[in-house]
Length: 267
Image 1 (cartoon, rainbow, N blue to C red):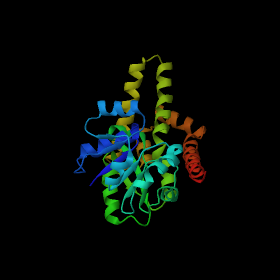
Image 2: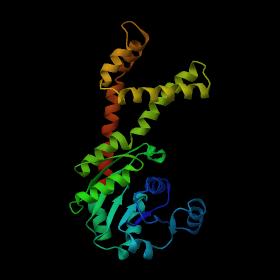
Image 3: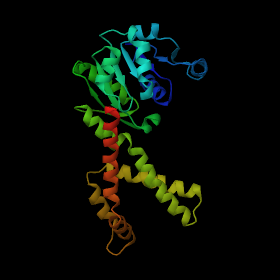
Image 4: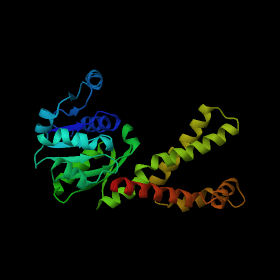
């Protein structure tokens, strides 16, 4: 099976490296990139891949095309590669907000998978959600799940609206977590801790909390109750969060991200 990744930026390389490291394909992965400087850089730094500047060969020979380009580049890229595509090829898109029907129309093909990755895919801890057009078979969906899951975990969702909703949870969620971490680190700095001390305390606390939740069956509320003692320090912080509607603000933020994803898809 032959894969071509269109776009040699961060996300394109993330999936190419994850798939290559997992040994999921028998043939060498091609990366299609534009610009002499970009092509030279990739050839120098990523010798494990075939770096291509023309779609004529790599697109024709590929069973799967992974689109890892900026959404505003999509129309131009579609024009460039569609002449080399055939109806049997499967297209996987990691472009935010670009609908399946837009890709189908732009490339004159039927088999399209739309996915939503997140930034931790760069370190093998990603959460990628995806959905498929009706022409994609169950076997092809299983293949896609393995390819996208090479950078962490992948979940197949029922429709594109679910993918937009996942944008508000996992797609954008990394920023929410980092935002909360930043608040704790600011408090640590105000207490007089160094940047190094603040980073160590906050990151280890987050790592521990996530692992604790993942490896046990208690709900988040049950764990919070275990940490909070009546009249103690933790309940004082939780009461402050509740007073300031922090939990509701987080939920509203996720909903706002979902609504924006829908707007981008309709624009």
